[in-house]
Length: 494
Ligand code: AMP
Ligand code: MG
Image 1: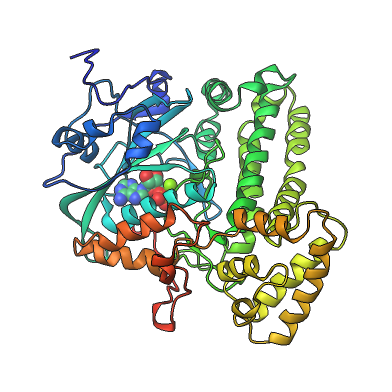
Image 2: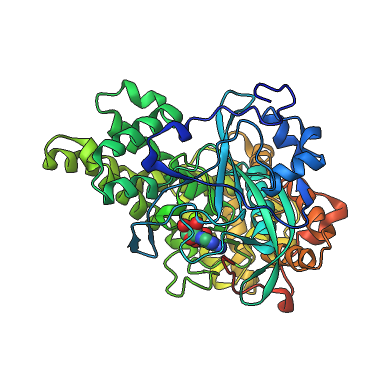
């Protein structure tokens, strides 16, 4: 069977060759009665996997965890993590199994991981399974984030398991296939740091440099360069999230990938009305991961990364600390610059000049005090440019006088751009989506899915593949939730 040309996954594994301390061998547990909910054929092609081979009883068996494909080396990865500020030295993949890696069409190494495929060495008291709800949420939201242009893990498949899992009540189970440029987290570094295993800490850092940050190798201090690169990607990522009103919800250090991809779509949500203090997650009672706290928390997380790699940053401790601080100091400015750039673009300004940031802030402040819908405000601003129609925008605000006054100032500013209103509109079309995975729509897809009706899931998935384009037949997906549709709380569902 080895080297079989029928092998559906062209595996080329590297993580499984790292020292034993990095993982525990794992074997997916079979499920009773698997059926495809979704198969991402386009992503399969990107991964150099023949989608027709996956779309078969054999392919389903692989993606349900009922059969291990040739070339796979199933493992559960070891990691630690700070969860809501408290350190847990031993987390690891408790309900996920890394099947292996493939080199995609661009030659980029991508992990293929099953989520919800049964217990592993790291399951502690968990069952290693996934309820259907989180599978549907992760599929929809991670693919929507990709369509929005945000770096993210991807969804290759969602499978109905045919088994029930015990949560608050008994619920249908699912298996999700996640694709990531790697599953290495800040918590993976913390795992070795917590064990004072400096040898493996270095092995991990070297692996991360080779896989994600090869340019760091040429630097005088490659580990500092790696840290700086992670910091830069994270600061940019958070600004990118926020520009679409995304709230991750559980930014623990085990849920922050060092690649700079968004990972772990547990209790995530999108803002309806704008409120920087907004949080949805049931377990985030204190609002640690509220919308407006996300950059602070990302800075906190990369600080934990810097601490973990201190032994690599310099020979003497004070020297290492200086390197760490030097790198970490760049976070606030990198974030702020990216954030301003994203939000000035959202109001149609390509080159920020003095006063522009204040213009953005005054809009955000009006949106907040008027409980204006985040996505709709910017979406209708696209139409209000020039002598366009203000009505849809203005009607989102209670105090219409104030928003009209703001629009007046904004128009004066846009006219001053060399490029004028046409380019402002073009710019806004690229950064202000018409469609985001609104919480009530995701919930609707989940509730139907639990009854084995996947129509709402597929419709939503389709709409979200072209988030910046108006789609007349799906216009109702633009709307904010009605009072009785508002989702106030999200759950991890683990
Ligand atoms: P999360 O909050 O989803 O990032 O998960 C935190 C930790 O709990 C990770 O180590 C997971 O592998 C583990 N975990 C979450 N759900 C389960 C489950 N159902 N069974 C076993 N481990 C789980
Ligand atoms: Mg996690």
